[in-house]
Length: 73
Image (cartoon, rainbow, N blue to C red; front, top):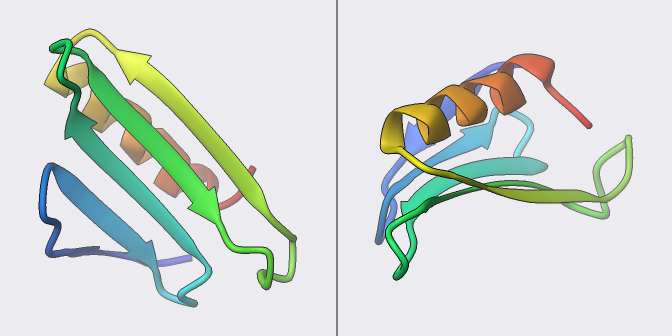
């Protein structure tokens, strides 16, 4: 499934082409980087949510790429 980077108020955000999932990366107040994968309840595969913290922006962007490549969780 294709993903498109969209404007985000903070950090970076990608939306899946079907509109049912979002991956985002943002710096936390503590200096870590939060990466989230959020799939809507209405998605054919159902709801999914995962959030992890990474120590660097580079690691967070790598994790976000993994989420997008896997397509679903």
